[in-house]
Image (cartoon, rainbow, N blue to C red; front, side, top):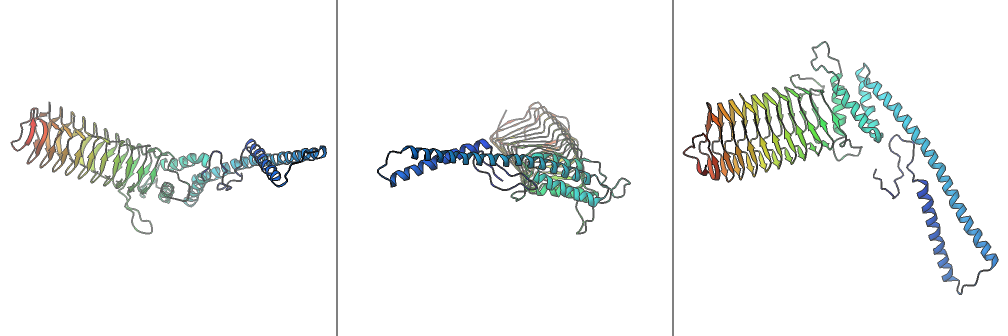
Length: 461
């Protein structure tokens, strides 16, 4: 319900409330006096127009006029007094609201802590309804539901710690939060609320189509996808998806999270000025996909992340003046792919990263006016490929890089303008391949590398 600062409020009670919305008394009294004066002036003007010529008022007429004025002001004061009584009743109703909300909160919290899964499910819906009605404490209600997901959880049904029905309760919380983050919607939106899933365990969850305007934390969370659960309608794939989600200016963090199977998908997601962080995350056999995602401004940080399997894919993603950092990341296995991704401005940084296995692919990527840097990166194995990439007025640097093993391939890459630099890079093993690479108008600093004979028309320094 939209409310103005001075204009009338809609006469509609919020869900679950007793108190009506009324103006302060001093505003009502002032408006009443103004209305009476205006009405009296209009009446006086009409009388003068009708009864011409105007005769001089006598004493009896003056007395009657005075009595009429006093009567009008008396009526105004009586109305203000009645309105004041209504305001007092409103205060009592507000106190009743507070008591009612407190009782509902205690009941819902008690249900969430009950042993029976059916009672806990009822507590989820009760807390969600309370969050809709209790605007002032909506964040608190959301925090309670997020805190439930942070409680210790055993996803393996073979374990002694496994609680029957617990997965359904947790999935219901995720669905309730998701439904309140999607737009447009008739029910109240929770998109501005902060969501704290620190140390939570996820073995599935659907956040697709959500709108996040507040901060979201998955720090130190576990994403477990090895289990397949039967849900009555079929087998669940235990995936967590943010398909088509939109992230605002709030921070989204997966710092120190662990991905131990399954899939986490950000396909077609949009990040507008967001800070998305996977710093220190352990990326295991599972997949994280950002296919067709759009990052406009903001930062995507995977600093100190450890790639030990699975795939992190940014295929067809679009980055506009964004900063993507994998500084000090460790690549031991798996794949990090930016195939057919498009970078317009911004920076893609692998500074001080360590590649011992797996692959990093920018095949068919398009970089315009951007920077790709591998400063002091160490290559002891694995493959880094720029095959068929197109770099226009961009900078690609391997300053102080160490090539001890593996392969760095720029097969059929096209460099138009900009700069490619291997200044102070050390090649003690491995391969740096430039088969059919084209350097048109680009400044190439080979350092200790031997320029390939097919290096095109670049300006060598």
